[in-house]
Image (cartoon, rainbow, N blue to C red):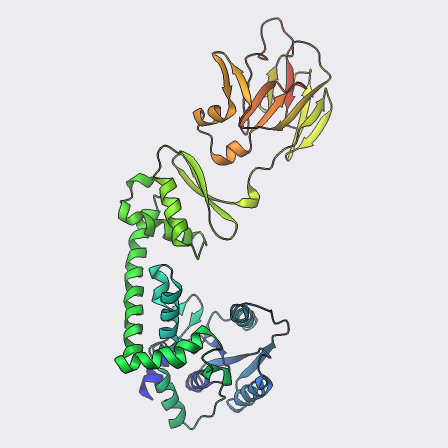
Length: 429
């Protein structure tokens, strides 16, 4: 009794909370304990329609909410998927909880996870593999989710319910070890572990708490290094992986696999490869460009501009800019390049650059790939490189950066020659 009361009282509760109530003993005890506090309670119940007794569970929770004089909200799961049911159900219910939190203007959602749930979670993470951080299990508080019962065992919650003569619903699927991997741990593995040590659940929870404490300390130091992550080589090697993980998570990139971290570290420490990228999750790439470290969405990478024929003194809108090949001197020369055509030609072309393209320089020809390296172009700048060519595909000029072009030595403006211009700014009259 005192443990449950203390678990509730040690939290600072806002005026309104959303309480997830399935009808099982855990959530019924949670609702009963919270009802003793001077707060407004909104009971959130999801009817998944996965079992024949689902409607009876919903009716039970609705009557319980009415009896306790609290608000009752229900959402029904109508579109049940053919696979990954557990994952999709979790997404559905937390979307419901978050919607209620906004509706009732609160930032607190309370769930009834307890020490046995924590032990099951830790064992599942260990079996499935992953990073040490994942072995820490659930946090007592994650953003706006509060789990006040994490330090209490299932047996203690049942004892509280019996002491207070509470009624609850039993989920028949919970006792089926073949229903989910978690059920197998709950019904077979954990009971056998307790025959080795009666405090097995407690000890697994203690280990999870120790990992959480260590991860907190690691994050504190990683946060310091991450402030100057551009100076990558100044970060001690032992701290590079934690710093990179922290930096990625601070940019909302989660669930990074260990092999992705290892690949990224190899790239960042490879001085012979100044540019490169590693695919992460959520359609994001980690990009190394010389001393710069950044992230970019895959769909935001430079778009390939197909060859477009530019006729003299006709304006075009390409690559989000206005383009004009003209024999008239432009008003804004800061948004134009001058070049000289040996003979009057009706058409020139503008297209994306290829790594095999070559441009004539004073001391010979150079591939654009080599030129990009010499000019220390970032990966994004390389992808955005454009070339101006003749109809025979001779390179007239190449765009290195936004307003920075390199004109071929064969087409530079010489004395007593009339220049042509390529303009990429709308002229003002």
